[in-house]
Image 1 (cartoon, helix red, strand yellow):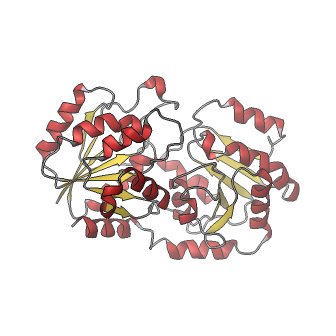
Image 2: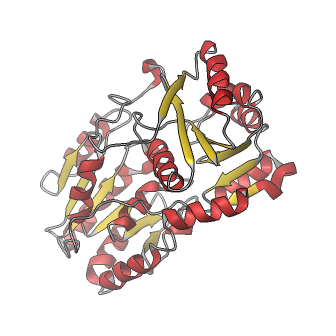
Image 3: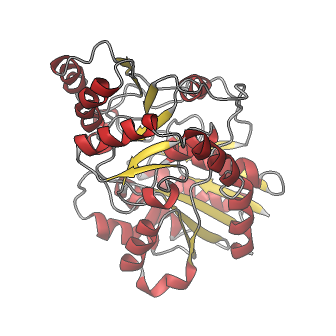
Length: 364
């Protein structure tokens, strides 16, 4: 089969692009793949990060065609021409923000003779978007299949597309397949990790507010922050200073390349996700790839992947004291080794091979 992807992929950075690349690489073992991606993704004026391109030296060898600038309608026609010209059997479209809806909706109404699959990363958006549901409905209407990764996305999709429930395939966010040169993670290093893009909804401030309680019980604890801030960096710098955490916080406020990921996960005991809201989390699956347990809040689809006292610990959101207690519990208890063993056992179930096989079974 000829399978095309539309949306971010290399050279664009971020979790949506990374997901599409992993998915496409698995499909490429038995199928012909083409990545149709962006000429430009966001206008620089609305992009909160420092740069939009991936600077990793890791090779991505699948054929890639940059055809679309979503906010430039002149490129929509060339995208239609090129996708139809390649004549895919399946077109997988990554969707996570309504800003792409007008372009997607127009283009997909002109794609011929192929199954259109919307890969839904998010339909409950962290930022408020004017007419978000109407835009999403417009984008999703041409789809033949919907691929979701969590219950919360499936439920939202059913509200938007109640007439197409039978075409919804709910799978899961697979565990990433990184090359782990550390045969065994560093144990009991007293280092906890906050990883990924830093946005308000991810609750880094809540974790920082929890740290004084944790430090009182575990004075040698170190919080490692690794990720680029989307917003005002001074909020977190000032909070670290106000709480007197300078000696217990190691900050790396920059984008973390693929080559650097292992360095952070392999040197930490546990990854903490103090999110205020979430659909699902690629960070949790990244953590599990390195057999690192996760302490996370009970929000969105997080509970579908982080199982309390199986592969991590769960805590109520927006409560620094409760979060501190969970971190202390993790270090004071003796089940860390069992959590790692459980993660090791579950990773095959949540593999990209399993994900791809189940996808093809439904589509075929």
